[in-house]
Length: 480
Image (tube, rainbow, N blue to C red; front, top):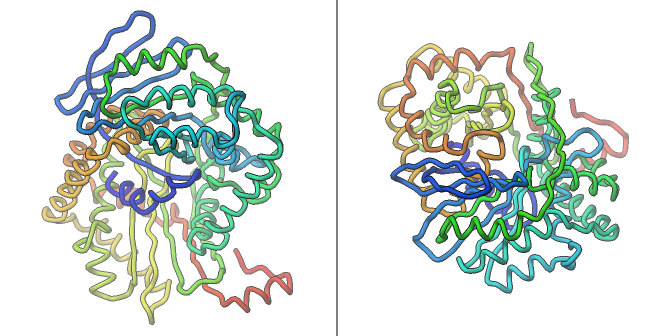
């Protein structure tokens, strides 16, 4: 979780425009009763969280935080790039854009204009496992959010002219953030190599040929298939009373009819039986390398300790200036200009533990990879010190406190966990589970997962602009 938070800090600017993002978490609590709808909740001394379910399948989770007179409202849909198939990759992200372009009762961009007129901020993001829409408002304006979100949950009007316009917008977004960004281009190639049959093979934004060929029918079908109350969770965090929020939700969302959504196939990644290596040649100043191994993620409340041991291992390698990578490879041997490690322990499907970095001037990618391998071998053969474990665990506690300061991230934690199919209350146990990790468990996961047969490597090979021009002119390609 600690390393996922670092990723979010680096990419939170994505939330300023309707596009891709990733996110984070927190805690749980009380018990409430209702007349017709099912309600389930738990109680802790830390937070008040109430969970409701409307008759049409819509889930509502409300967390009280009375420190400021604001409210964050988020609508999470269980659909993202991992739900897509070849030919329509990126359509979840494209549909996210279209959700701002008008409904039966709202004109293009009128949704955003109304939120702004009410002093609020709003946006959306698409990930591999979800699409989410959010608003931050003064607490008495929550009704505005619910009224507008209910309108576009079932009454979106997709205009053909807007489809063409947003198709160009998304194409340019892809060019700017992936095609013209060497590290992003490498990361995309890395994922498509590491994952063969898992839908994590697809980039969230989609392949360019798919982006430029969505039809109006494609978007309408995707919307009707996934945008329904029984496929959504609303998370509200802020200075609110749960019963009042519940009554408001029933007023606006209860009339919406549920949809028969598709049953997802398992799509489990096939076992890897050997190292996979690729090169990507692109205009860049410096070389860059990514190394990744398939690892498990947290799936249930009684999940094994392995994801938490991997989280601690990531902190030992890359958890600040005193971590091993910074101490040994950057400052000590001076073989790396920068190198990092981590993985997201929470996702719908198993993921990859990644190490990535740039060799320092005068050193090669091969030398950096060898140095990384040596650090991994040390983890396999020598137990980490009690001081290292204490440092990582102290960082976990500090980050947990930091996360709880933000109502926005509290909502994100709850929404993300619930949408990927993990009990959102599990976030409450994160610190305890990390604190239980032993040095022997860190050694065990290092031995089990950091093996060559499960390794995928991707190297960015810098080329000069004139070399790229020559390759295009001759029709040669040097990607492999």
